[in-house]
Length: 265
Ligand code: WAQ
Ligand code: MG
Image (cartoon, rainbow, N blue to C red; front, side):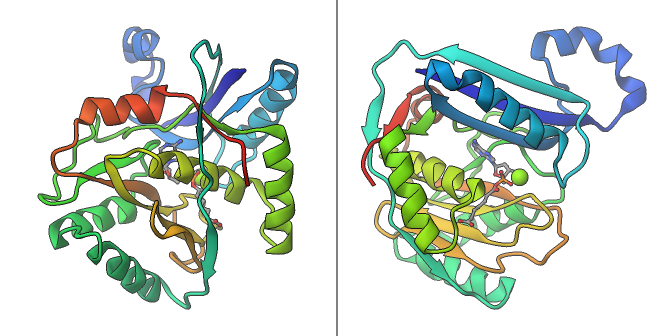
């Protein structure tokens, strides 16, 4: 199996480009590169070409704008892939961002996420500068624990088996939501929820025309929230609320590095 990842960005400071060549070759994308889009999954070798072409199409036709750098990484997975369960799916037809926010606050209060943590979470989700990864927020102190506050932590190396993928497509079709956005977010949220130190996740798409977000946790499942933001807004993001005493390096290693797959729907 292969991990395929794509990220597309636009450099916001064009004049500074040449100065940063050296840095760029080290880190490949400048810290002020504006995030346009990203995607990742685990696939069979014979599907690599098709997936790369899908990811490229997505990168160049994105509502956030035209990228001037697209990076695709293809890596053979050598470790054993861990099987994880898929979260259950439910949709709540919220009428406004305020209503969605009230529900999220309710859901977060029950597993004892502090007010400070909730407020800091909303700050990230509302920030005009979209990160390309997620923010890790300590459930008690509300401290942001991701090492790079501009980029955040990108979850990768997650996928779904062929048969399970077909069953998921059927199930989502019945609900009228069989689209890549939902499938990918559900697989990502299932990996995040399977991390023992993560209590809950909240996600708002950074696509200006995608207004459904979600709350997810092992207990509540994947709870879709309609109208979590107003159409046209560029902000978005992901926050993972983690146990106050969690080993941050281990959480990041799990999210980025441990390959997981869903085999049952
Ligand atoms: N790992 C960590 N954070 C990520 C990742 C990732 N692999 N991909 C995206 N993010 C963060 C990043 O900060 C983005 O700005 C933000 O999430 C939103 O990303 O069921 O499309 O790809 O209908 O715009 C939710 C689907 C869609 C709800 C979420 O996210 C539904 C979506 P986007
Ligand atoms: Mg997006």
